[in-house]
Length: 261
Image 1 (tube, helix red, strand yellow):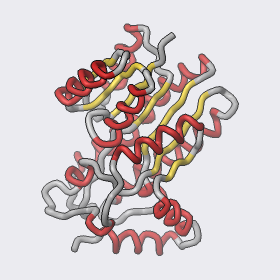
Image 2 (cartoon, helix red, strand yellow):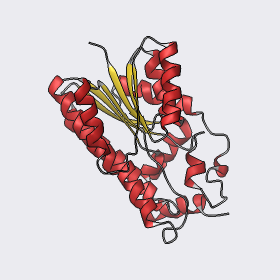
Image 3 (cartoon, helix red, strand yellow):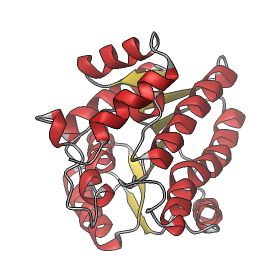
Image 4 (spheres, helix red, strand yellow):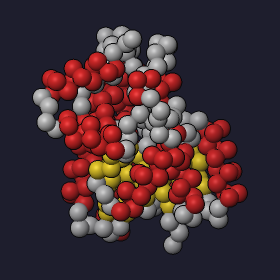
């Protein structure tokens, strides 16, 4: 039976590169993203280059009933994913009192609620089959509170904690759960996060790794069944140091790094 991988946020950045990596391994794809046009272009690219089938679904995972619709679509086609990659997510830069409540609600729905709902549906199927791999994309932001991006950091902390807990529950079941924690990466994240502020969120970090590098590391970590995958030596060192700092100090340091210029 042919393998399928379901990837959210597949139209750009890390998600797009993960789709290309999966396709290069001759794995059929279910790709989800808001930008239907980009998804269709990606589907054409991947089907022309590889002997696979690609189902491209333009949808908005911030809408409460989208995950149910996706599950119904897969059920109707008799597709049970062997791999689930929850990559979709976004952040917003700015002081908590100035960011719109609707923006933060959508962030929580996408980064937390939809990820959890989709994982529950697919994880149950994987458990019943006794095999499967899940990759949830968090961030090094999940290891620390983040002034000026408070809600984003909180959502990524949820993804990290949830993934580690589920990995422990799944041990011995044939299902593995990996959480990928990149640092700042060359994607469209910065443009969306800083929309309207004129601020370059990542300018203090220097040259950023390409999305392809991060995706390759995440894919390899998932295939090995690694639980927490922190991309980059500097990021791993930072996370190690955070363990020894008081939470207040960590928040203050993050605040200084992310504070408006």
